[in-house]
Image (cartoon, rainbow, N blue to C red; front, side):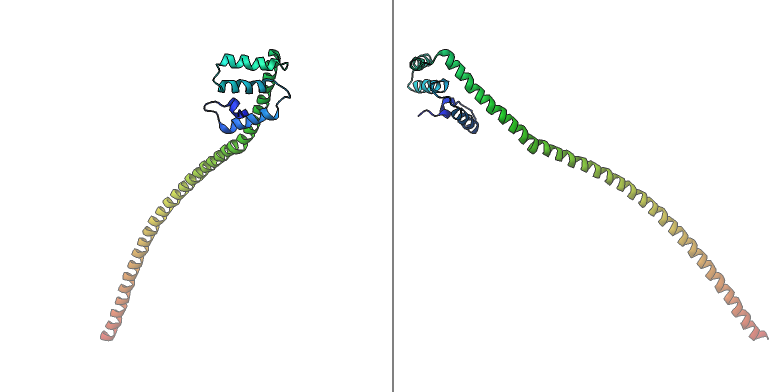
Length: 181
């Protein structure tokens, strides 16, 4: 049995696309004997091992008995080509739509995310600079704290030594008062 799909089958064709286009030809089959039926007859004769020229001539001789002319055959082949071109136009439109929704929108999402990453990197760099400034301020403050602490310690030590000396002098004076007076 010669199906529409096997009429147009060839090595390396996409099975799904062939099925779809074959169905489009079947749905748009013109009434009567035309290119479509002629192609079916030629394919059947080729399957019987006839050479191509004999298969075409035999199929045409049979078709001519029902009034098919070469011009009508070429004209109806053009009609089926147009059917296929309309299917291709619809496919292209659907493909563009799918491309827009599945590819272009995702590419835009990728770009948006990459831009966001760049903004985050810039923000991280800004924060790192800010932190470096804070660390520098901390180092300066710590050095200042250490210096001030050392000064205060020296002042405290000097005061305590002086205080102790004065206290000792007073104690000695009181001792001497008891001793001499």
